[in-house]
Image 1: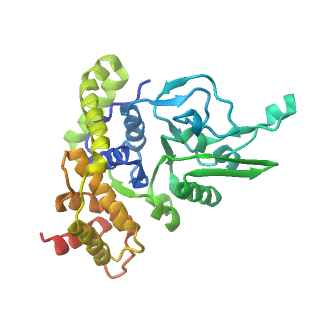
Image 2: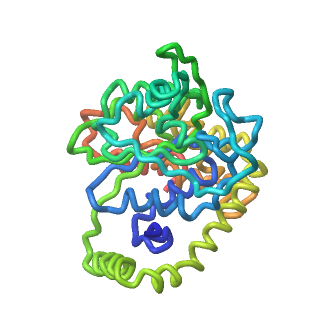
Image 3: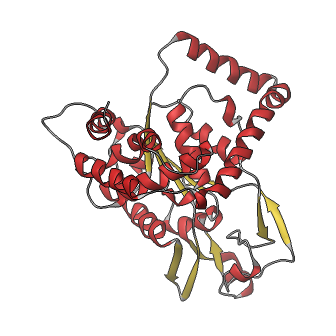
Amino acid sequence: MIPFPFSAIVGQEEMKQVMLLTAIDPGIGGVLVFGDRGTGKSTAVRALAALLPPIEAVAGCPVNSARLADCPDWVTPGEGMVTKPTPVIDLPLGATEDRVVGALDIERALTRGEKAFEAGLLARANRGYLYIDEVNLLEDHIVDLLLDVAQSGVNVVEREGLSIRHAARFVLVGSGNPEEGELRPQLLDRFGLSVDVVSPNDIDTRVEVIRRRDAYENDNAVFMAHWQGQDADLRDRILAARVALPLVASDDQTLRDCAELCIALGSDGLRGELTLLRSARALAAFDGAGAVTRDHLRRVAPMALRHRLRRDPLDDAGSGTRVARVLDEVFGA
């Protein structure tokens, strides 16, 4: 079945906003969505990928290379280019290291006596999305693998006499329920943006969710046709923002604002400032603005900074509240 339309997702505005920002600038560094089950996390990921235009890739290339020259040397490409949907690859809990990074093609080795590489999930996710549900329950050695690849954008496999490398650039989307376990700080820091989602607590919103989901499942053709126009408009805005993104200006005052916010919040390292600026620039491009303003910074700061705060045992306010408080102190209420 065609994924649920992105435009038809009820509420969860912050989650939809971060998804759109990573679609405009995949370099933001992925999204972490923590919260209740059944709040549309995986629906939003698949809906966004379906919203994006298909990619052009070399026929037969397992890493979705955009040009023949980009194909790894261990690939025997087909002829010409093919059009395929933006990849959305699920990385399930319990996936073996071989399945994630790739391994020796045993069948080919046994039947033909040839040593060949069988690409893994990271190869299939290149130029798309890698989605991990319950990311906080992922095994540590898989987390370490992801950290290495996320940093370099290259998957390197050295084993069984094979020496393989290929591009592995993807938007990492992780979701989970914080009550089931915390995320390792190293992986938490790798996510550019984070949002907390909760179940809606007003009857009208819940009824609208039920109504749309019921229509999607029982009258799919009519439902999809109804939302097709809004998804098309959103796709056009994303594509226009991608074009405009390199032209969005950010002056010295904007950079000072980013630094001042991160210092006031006690954010470790400089990844907070860089993500904040990049996200604000993507938002400005989405809004059709020529320069980043304090309003853009204010709107993306909670998403870019709340998961980078140090724990303060004397402050029992939530991370979002702390970011909002510092925003008022630095920018004025």
